[in-house]
Image (tube, rainbow, N blue to C red):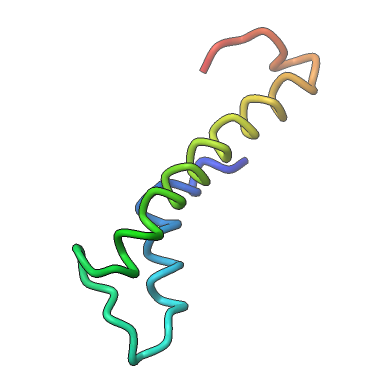
Length: 64
């Protein structure tokens, strides 16, 4: 359900939403501040995906 919410996809979306006058290159303050948050979001999406799977009898208790 949330498989497409990877770190790279989230980071790209955040960078694309930034104003044009903000430096979003790797190593910039913007990038350095938001990259860890995007990683946390990706982790939470992974956990949420597993939680959703546990809510259905046909996928409950099955790994992957």
